[in-house]
Length: 443
Image (cartoon, rainbow, N blue to C red; front, side):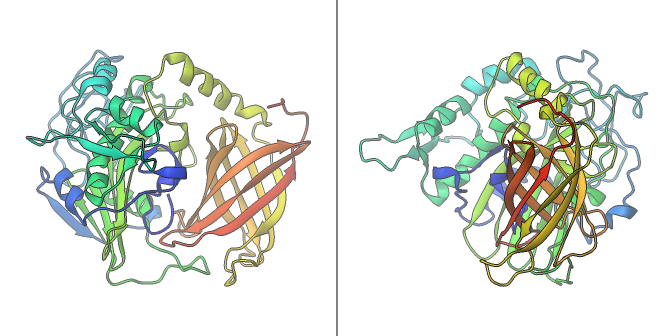
């Protein structure tokens, strides 16, 4: 996630990307957010705590459990509304709330029709994603005159129409499409979530989490944060909102479980963003990991975008487990160029990057002419060709994202992409190349 929306669809997962993969983000202001949060009454406004000072006291709420775990338990929430998740199981079974295994679970508030994980395939094919009375469905259209518009009501119909090149045309249609985007994020992935030996999300405290998932904006040309008096954070039910005079974004955690098989619980969120004073909007469903280092990393590109048999994600898990053939926990030194801090788009300066990887997860740092002191990095290789790096330049929180493509070229590893500071619309070139030590397995 990057730029002013922080939920940039291009990051992966299920999103509102339209033709040529570009985000289609226009619709009428605040309409969908109001619809999705109408059931939530408690609102908490605050300035987020620094990440380093974040507290996460234990708490438990109503559990929606995976069919893989037969112990279905209900626990009454005893924490203030709008601070911990409710109607959702970011907690282990009652009486054992601090010990693994942490079982997959999902939000009954966000997906009231989803009673059991075994229903996901049926709901994909048959469930009307909008339960508004007399809803007539979403109309998708194409660019070719010969393409007939389609009215879709289920995820399966929507996915087939998108595969045929149809898209939401009007701002109203884009608003309606968000229902499909969010259901199409949870239904293909929930059946494949695994029990987790470790979790950094099981007692998720939303007030502290807000400063990580929706961090304050940074300066366009330096890793600094100014003070914007219009910037504020709110919690409405399970949804974290951030807005200022120019833009807004929101995130709602909706499921948790081990998606990629690394033993750590991952968090799936619905999200949206847009311009405060305009019609630009974007929607997505994204996934995040937090492992032993405590840093929040997007794994949205590891999500499934439609129902798939177990062998599909098993093959991906095997690639992640094998670290894509790269040497495990071995430093790779890169040299390259980046355009961060440059006023002119055609100017770059020298860049040095240190990265190591394990299970396809990256960590390290970089220095460049604009940032001579090491800036921490963490991220993930999603597939054989693409991934993401997050820059943690201030208080171990996001200051920029680097979406990249990667490849093995001879004995070298090449990563090439663009850096985008939090709260910025512009991106800067970011490319580096380094020799892979030893004899890593071929890709």
